[in-house]
Amino acid sequence: MQVSVVGALICTGILGLVVYMRWSMITALIASLAFGATAIGTITSLGGSSPLIFTVFDMLVILAALARRGIWREIGAVFVRIGAAWIVCALMIYVCIGALLFPRLFAGQTSAFVASRTGRGVYEAALAPVSGNISQAGYFVLGGLTFLAVCLLLQRSGTLADIRRGFFLWFSLHVLMGVLDLLGKVLGAGDILAPIRTANYAMLTQVTAGGFWRIAGAFSEASTFGAGSLAGLAFTYAYWRKTGSKFALGLGAALFVLLLLSTSSTAYVGLAIVSVPVVFSIVKSLASGRLRSAEALLIALLPPLLLSAMAAGLFYPHFFDPVLQLFDTTVANKLTSASGQERSYWNYKSLQSFFDTGGLGVGLGSSRASSWPIALLSQLGLFGTAMMAVLLAMLVRGLRGCHGRIDPEVDAIASSVRACALSALVAASLSSGSADPGIVFLIPLAVILVSRILVVEYSRDTRAPYPHGDGRLAEVGDGCQS
Image (cartoon, rainbow, N blue to C red; front, top):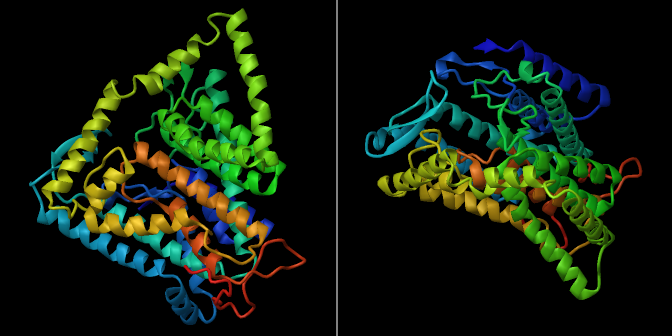
């Protein structure tokens, strides 16, 4: 493995920050997600696979969980109280077996889309084992182990607060690098974040759309940056709505502006989708006469924005021409573009491969699609998709069904990370090529499930709740089941 010096330096910087602030390793793990194109090195034996820096913190979080005293008793408690732990383990085993077996079992019987080692493109070929089977299965197993580790660490006092800090640090870094990337392009300095893009990806960072620079931030392309901005916007909005935090409001406003400037069709369509429940909630509040202050603020902002837009269009008739051109390029005509047609073909052939394999799938990492649900069916088959659907249902349920009093801060953190994960899945459903939902899905799932079963206690030193002092998963008396 060839170690990346830049990746190692960024890891050191994040570690130094969390140690200085006395935060846990979970904070560092979540914050490292902001560096979506920074690899820790290159593994030449796996076809040039370049694991991102978050994998380093993944391993450190797992080691921190295993280093606890009485670890076997706590692991047993997790599997007794959290049914999803069994599903995650079963899914990890199924993914590993499928990644090794299915490409060989169905070799040559269907098509697959694999990355070219030379041109850095994607081409269609007959199904066969590839290095992605090993690397993608490794990522999936690492994510599953992280889920179990987070379930264990959440029994410790203050861990939930560290998760909240991690998400805020992640999106603060995301905004910072998005601004730096945009400023560098607007001022003619080019891709000033190129030195930190050490992953072996196709870097589409100096591209325009409709006359606008596409913002990539610390990622390899605008679509992944837009997807991250959408997840951050959902997180900050949910947290602000629950707590009224001014910092969350300001960070959310910055993420919203960057999302609009990102020129990402994934971000725009995703924003329209995740706005539906927000609008529905506001309408429901208006109908019941119980409008919240956060909802009232959103409604109050609409008239001045509409009036400003009308005034600009009246006095400057061509003011919105660039915006309309951008909309036509990224949304209206996206499916008719060469890129849109190519991705539609990926999805069509991926669905065909699902049927060609009798519903078993081609194995994780064997091919790629352009939509997470289609990638699930194509790569994990019907059985793997069913297990993932059960986990998704648990995440969607959130803390509903807990009839006792819930600490407001626990409710705010659980609701915001849930909104983040669901928004990330919406973006993945529009453009993701892998069946792996990643730790952006698994960490919020662990937060939701553990929050449902941990007894909430209050401390004068911190607003974050913590479980019983003996570290055991406790039975919740309000009938909330996981």
